[in-house]
Image (cartoon, rainbow, N blue to C red; front, side, top):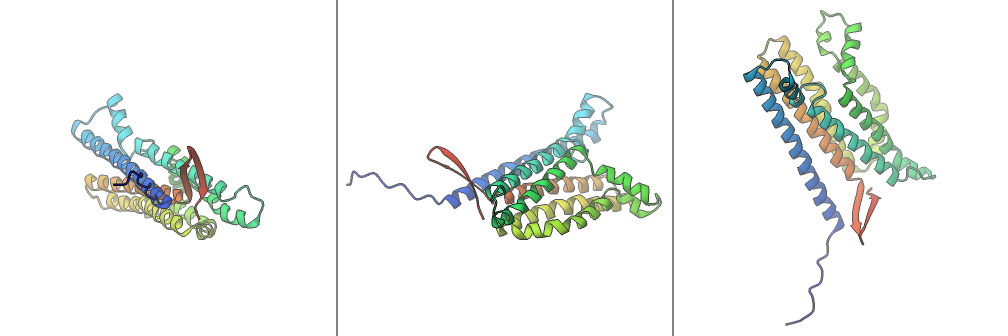
Length: 253
């Protein structure tokens, strides 16, 4: 029998990074599930106990994902800000501070996305989109069905206008990151705008309040899920490795 030590197995850095991202995704999705479970507990408790004004009611409102400035809103805002910071890191690693045209061409889309994610985070935390409902009310007759759509009208207009910048940016980022970011953004936007419209239709049709609660829960859960997918997509462009007791970051094109 040989006394020679067995050689170390080769570890594929790319596979190792994929496992880390998978573990990160599982943790983030688990937190999202926990927040939605608290939302369900809050809604059920409120319907059974019917608390009056006070600390207990404030706690239930904080856990209710359908409320503005709730735990779910804070978590989604924090995820979006993390997306912004990760995109900013990708911008720097791709050569954002470089002087060549090629480095700027590769890097600038990440700066665009970093700004977009930061604005979305600010909107989620301070509810800027709610002001859109007042803008709609100022230009649409209150008896019109469009008045019920509130903030979704200006939000849709802003989204369409921003495509002039977003489409070239998406074309310039790596394919794997582009696919995940588009899937995530599509999920979140479809949930935010689409389920809001569904909620308006249910309300106009006199549907039971329980059905509206389900629609709001689906909206919030899908929004959070989409943002997690966006973050995982951005992270595919940032290679993080620990070698020789040193953390290194690089751009993964």
